[in-house]
Length: 107
Image (cartoon, rainbow, N blue to C red; front, side):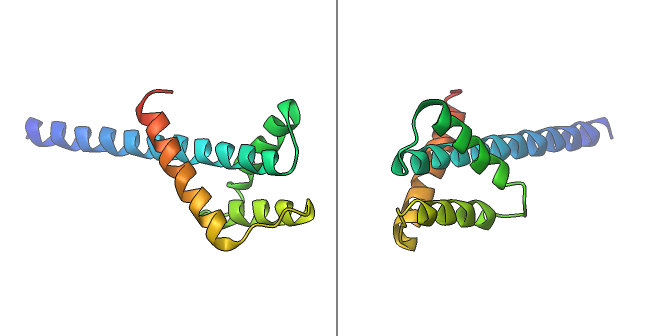
């Protein structure tokens, strides 16, 4: 029975590790998205970093990604820099992949 318990513990640890990586990659992606929006709206330096943090925090409003997408769409429109859904979807996917790569690389 010890081997069975050890396997169970290993699966639990792997699940927790994977969940942690997903959380980190999502937060990283949201920060990168915030920096992209900041650049498009003319924000630089500390202002861009502060804006990126608001995008990261927006992800805690509800489950899924829609809260983040809704925020950046609204902010881009308010700045007079609207983006179409296709471009936003492409950028979101690109930054998701980049965030995963960076997390895997230990950056």
